[in-house]
Image (cartoon, rainbow, N blue to C red; front, side, top):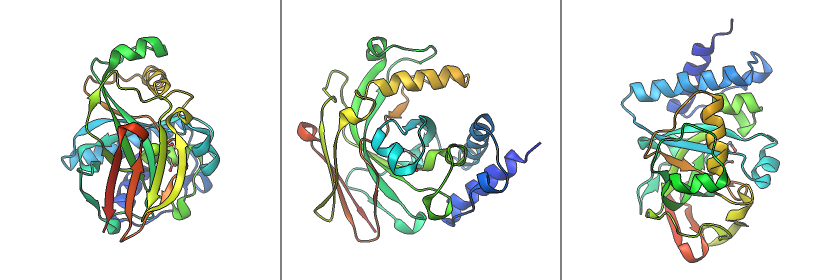
Length: 254
Ligand code: OOG
Ligand code: MG
């Protein structure tokens, strides 16, 4: 019997103190199911401090991200209200270990997901869509992890910035995406890099929900996963995500 609760506490403290820890896969390995147990236990610490669960994020839904991090399986993690960066807001670098930013799209779902959906069915579950930037921050040294490590670490969830919510029918397919840091292009891609069609992220989410016995509540925010590799950010940076005709998202790192 491994001490999954103890591992969850260590990950929570690493996040709170912005101090990296060793990968568990190298000393105290656990399997994928146990990794998701650790994720839930660790997330419970956040909820215990008054944070509110607001949704889910998918990870490794693009080849670009899989290749960058060497993990080749889709994963899911959890979001709280405290992770939200407000529009025109800024990110405090000292609260993170080695933050990176990546461009995504987001959905707000308008009915609970309690069955495996097809991409056609998924459309009816979308209440609104938005462009998004996710800040990830691995709690592991050197941002290195196995599949199980990263799942336990809530899939590196750290912060996110959402654009204005747009009507569900807004086209989010084939959107050209450019990520700039201090005006310089650091990543370029397209929203279709997310599973060939970002709506497929909801299909994957529905499969995860059924596999792990959860119902996704109506109103949940869903981050579809990054369309490009993530880019490093540091104090003083101005980050901009350009999403074609859907416009621009920006924040400062202080
Ligand atoms: C894991 C999280 C992956 C995405 O969008 O693919 C992710 C990581 O890269 O640290 O958020
Ligand atoms: Mg992401």
